[in-house]
Amino acid sequence: LNVALYGKADQSSVYQEEGMPEHAIDGNKNSNYVIKSCTHTIPETGPWWRVDLKKPHQISRVAITNRGDCCAERLEGAEVRVGQTICYDNSNPHKNSMQKLLEINQEVNISGFKINWQKSECLSICQNAEVYGEVCEVPELNVALHGTADQSSVYQEEGMPEHAIDGNKNSNYMIKSCTHTIPEMGPWWRVDLKKPHQISRVAITNRGDCCAERLEGAEVRIGNSLDNNGNNNPKCGAVESTSAWSTHTFCCSGMEGRYVSIVIPGRKDVLSLCEVEIFGIPAECPSFLGELNVALHGTADQSSVYHEEGMPEHAIDGNKNSNYTIKSCTHTIPEMGPWWRVDLKKPHQISRVAITNRGDCCAERLVGAEIRIGNSLDNNGNNNPNAEGVETVRLAVHVSCSTMEAHQVTILVGEQYVNVSICKNAQVYGEVCEDVVLELNVALYGKADQSSVYHEEGMPEHAIDGNKNSNYTIKSCTHTIPETGPWWRVDLKKPHQISRVAITNRGDCCAERLEGAEVRIGNSLDNNGNNNPKCATVESPWAGSTETFCCYGMEGRYVNIVIPGREVSLTLCEVEVYGVPA
Image 1 (cartoon, rainbow, N blue to C red):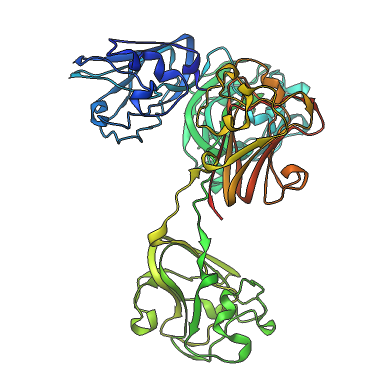
Image 2 (image 1 turned 45 degrees about the vertical axis):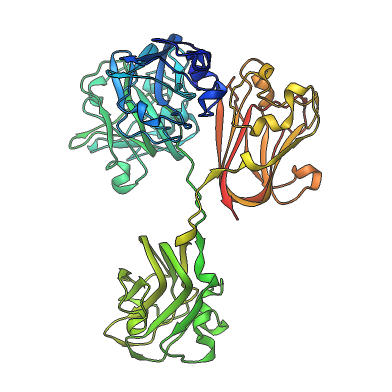
């Protein structure tokens, strides 16, 4: 949560009433000082601003919005201090865009934080103090409970890997509460969290009935790789000394990964764990920045044509069938250095190229093929820079191009006398160079509607006004009447590819009302848009929380929030929809 919203602000001085300290924690990120959205001190040596969070919190990050109407350079050199620790030193503020997220290397228990300057200057902050964290005594979600466990071996049924994520911390092996491998070199245990998470801490409960010393030297590893069964992923911590019934907690400071492994490296031993708790949140959604298969709109050519079944345009027709005889593939005659090329019509930034090989025969012919990307037609485009080569025979080849710029993409087989056959090659992914589209909160430009209006404080447009304040009474939230299946909808005016939707819940009361709400995205207004495909469901809403749902490029003009099958009021304090035009 942004816990600053519930704090009390102060600063070293006040220039005038437009610059009161509380303006930095009012939930309004407008960067224009004159509308009373920013703070402002007098010109003084070492000006500072502070928020008292009222009780100790574990702070994960701090976000600062700089003044946008003038004077952005004043913030240069500002320090963010949490407790006695300098957490961030800003050396390059940018006008109207200085929203730097701060990652703290360890959890710090504090009751406030301070921003100060050691020079004679004015201090002005616009909705600073998005201070994200938790009250120390409130536990995070143990995401291991929803994972799938595995281990290097099983000694007997009392020691199955899933016993470490069953929520039972009893440390007696005999009651089937612990894991147990056979004695072996480098025993390991692993949980698959199903998707990447940002992990704050991992807690391991050791066996208590015997053999506690076995856990000594065990390492906690977190990452997205399964190389060496996940044991090559980055290390969070290691058990240095242990005792029976002990629980060891390792602070992992937001390390990201889908897999969490416990491994005893370089020693023949038994690994036995009575519970593994993993506290964290889903990692940030993958961005969907308008990357398209631009080959579909290009013009194909090749060095020769063997037969009409093998025309060059077959590789960019959208059909990935790998059977040549159904006119889904290209085919040259047997010749020295055969090539195929697509003209993208204008320069693009190419992120990757995907090639589908022939599947009915002759797959080895593609070995040694090179992918060339550039703007030249010298030597039929075959002198352009080399992106990658095909080294082994596979049905599909995916090549990352590190965003090369190109007008032409060519695939050629070098100094070999061979024919080349490609089935739906040229999935060439990229963007037009002069029209790179950035992902935005497109809801801000939409038009909102809802099933009913309880009162003027709860108008539908309040959810797309850019104000995430979660207090209904200040006209920052929506509100329907109590009704069956209440809904809210934003019309984005045209179809978009949506990467994620973020919903800010009401914070002053009634947070539980949002439970079961569904996010639906599509182009239909049937049933007011509530029949469109579902992106996600709100499962456990907190007061004032902002929950982000990954929609992975779902396409639609309309984004709906609906609570199906229940009589309740729907209240939303902000809906952010991130994506690009389809």
